[in-house]
Amino acid sequence: MSSTSIDDLLSFEEERPGRADRSRGGRAGRVFRALAGIAAVVVVLVAGLRAVGLQVSLLVLVAGVLALFVVRRVVAALAPPPPSRAGARAPAGDDDGTWNWGARDALRTAINGWERPLDWCGSSQERFAARVLPRLGELADERLRQRHGLTRESDPTRARALLGDQLWTFLSTPSRRPPSPRDLAAIVAELEKI
Image 1 (cartoon, rainbow, N blue to C red):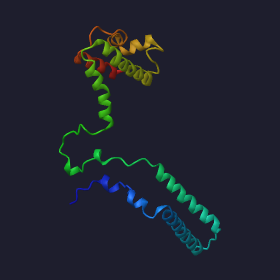
Image 2 (image 1 turned 60 degrees about the vertical axis):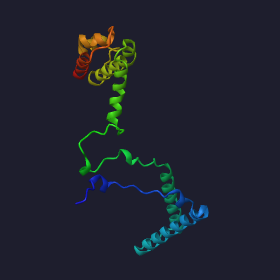
Image 3 (image 1 turned 90 degrees about the vertical axis):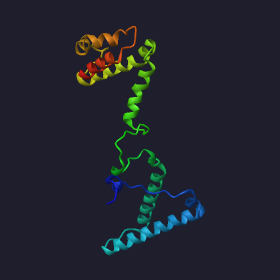
């Protein structure tokens, strides 16, 4: 049995030629190869069209094939570089069940977006009030906007009723010390209830 995953079987990456392959033949060689390719495609198209009894102007066929070659070349030049294989999935048989904390993924980026400021603000109220509290307020406003069509600024009375007194007080009047992890968990639970 092979350890190839379904993702490996269904993915296709066109290998790009290296620098040595590109420089071989120079500009004249590349132009000659392109013209030979265009001529070959035109010949096949003319033969195919004649086989089914259709006639198309040779000039139109050459222009169409040339346009396709140019579009293909432009798309290849504008294509983003292939993703690095460093963060790729390991085959299913090689998974040891541990989380790869070094991998760059969206979940880790989102966690770091909260973990670093919370860690940095753990001992300083000024830092907490400047970094974390506005983010929590934005979260509360976004939840209110998505679910109820309002924000704390647009309809404070209704927003206070929806948020509850504890969350409203926390967001509107910063405390003298950063909240404990237990208090912060309670605040996040209240945010999730909105």
